Image 1: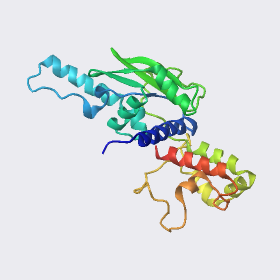
Image 2: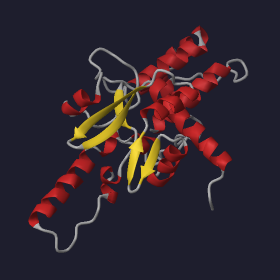
Image 3: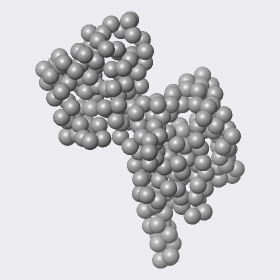
Image 4: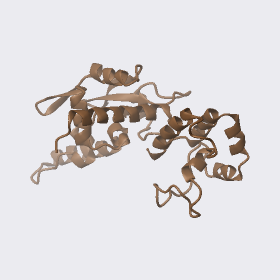
Amino acid sequence: MPVTSDEFDELSKELVAAILLIHGHNRDSFWYRLHDHQEDIPEQVPKLKDNASEKERECHQNMLRTSIKHENLSLRKQLGVDQDTYTKFLLREKVIAKHGKACRFSLEKAKHLLKRHGFPNAEIEMAFIVPNKRRYYLRLGNTAPGYFSCVVDQVNCGVLTPPRHNIQRSRRKIHSLQGDQATSSSSDSPDDNENDNDEDDNGEIGGEPSSDNNAVLDEGGNKYCILKQLGINLDLSIDQNKSFINALVGECFALQC
């Protein structure tokens, strides 16, 4: 069934909203590849012919290794969107235009799309991470001393995987939104102190991952694990603090990425 115009409008809003959440919710700075070509996706690297020469085999192996090495730079992969849907989204927004089998990327259209959805100062740059392969990259996340101001420096330093969500920052952010009462309540809770021991020096959750990432309750069936990790006071009235709810939605989205 073909996708309607209204559905694409919603898709556009959802994808840009997800990008903004990655940018603004406690991720360290990282450069993401904005558009994946076929050879950028390991599963879509063209198959080798049976009668391929030794040189062709070597080139194919190099292409496959490079694709796997840089796979996690993909913004599309970070958003969890399939290539076909993401390509249609970029085409409809005129961020890319097809010319035969090739695609031309429009930096102007990409910036206009992000600006239209509330991201006026997006940092996008073109780079040849792989020789003769022009790609465009978007920087998302919090800047801190030592962050990479260009994608080439990031790749040359071997930083090829997006940073994990920093749960300590989430806790501090939500506490500040809740106010002194929530902060006092959370700090007095022994359960909250226990969770602090499960974080590494970067404020990330340590230990083995849960067997059910979608589980909300613990084995006792009465504790909200993610909310507990964030140090959230469940006694706070939802109606009293809508900004808290908005922040919670953003933090929970970031935790699943």
